[in-house]
Length: 176
Image (tube, rainbow, N blue to C red; front, side):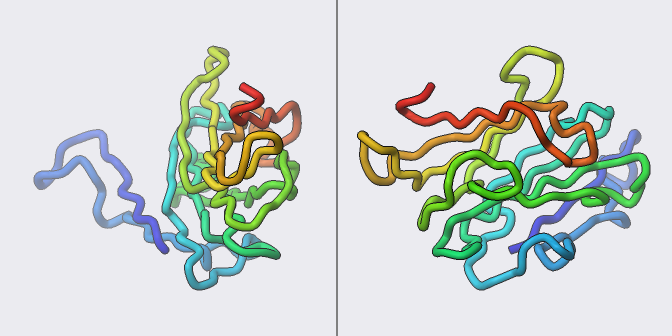
């Protein structure tokens, strides 16, 4: 998969609000040390934007629901920061998240498709963008298989350069 980032301009020029000359096309290979690209990773299947680290510049989360990571379609997402220090665009700082790794709550399960759905908003009304990652294939004990869940990452936990720590909350049907 691949995402295409069109950077906006402050003025309307030649029929567009976007600076076509600075368009980025990003795939997993653009992020060394992240996760290796494999067939059916589905990079870019889910995507969300918001100022997750509260630095005044929007960031993005890019879903990779087919990522294997030691199993079958366990999934994950890459968090890509926008930054004044990286005027060329997204991805100056990045980090991969998947259940059971990188401080992400939950355990890795085959066919979870973690990160297949991503959304941002200020869910706790503290003025910082938060991120929710859907886990549509999550099995939930006592309920059943493929019940689904969501993991919420509260904003400004990200403000230390993606060394994300703090109270991450795992939500599912049985744990609203």
